[in-house]
Image (cartoon, rainbow, N blue to C red; front, side, top):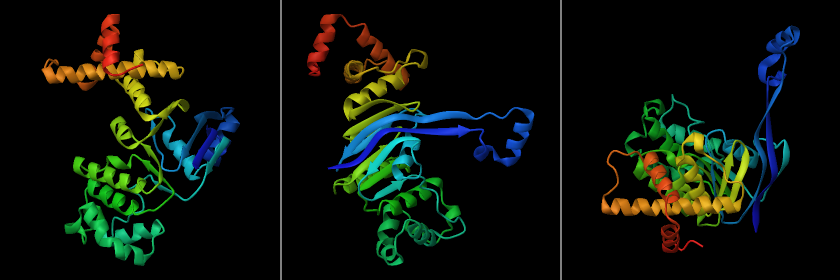
Length: 316
């Protein structure tokens, strides 16, 4: 069953209009002849659909239009063009740190945040010990919220937010809070929620997170939809894009190009594994330099060696 459909969704921002600059600046600019409205398309003709139980990862560099698209899906914004169709209840874990009062205790804020999310007091009372234990804040329940570290605040926010039981769950960079152990625990918690048949959307700068959690992937760049489909090839092609120097980056024009770029990355990654096993990788080399060096090594392979590498990885 299709749970979410985005049909040619485009979202336009206007800068310099009355609403964005205020009446005073509008009058001054109008009288001086400097009044000008500029348009900016944050997303342009984004089209995809998700079935029940799908987990979509949205990748793209800063300014790609990821968060703006989420606002349209959650109903916070209305698309300038196109249509978003959803079936079922939506829960969005976006700005985790919002909704807390720094002058209240951890316990008081737990109930406050729960109320803002629509939970009843009885429900929070029943879940309180579970929330605090998951957030690892048993020794801080009576501390003022402002005394907590940013990591502690995020852990509490995530712990409260993941009590939701929606049909569609939207996550915007919320799995990057806390230390590595808490990140792993958070990811497992999300997996448990999704295992109940929930449809999910994850925006993350961690390509590995998207690989581990998502069966579908959407790649956006400056508002344009570059690719939508199976996670592995898109993540590999996107990783190639990230590890390539900016002046040499090129976006795939079609599915065939994306596959070639993805296959190139897989071979480079395999070369890297062999280097690590043989301990022949150059010392002190950064991860970016290492991957790009390996990508160049793939390009320099003789045809017979390249064909053997493709057979090893079962690339067709």
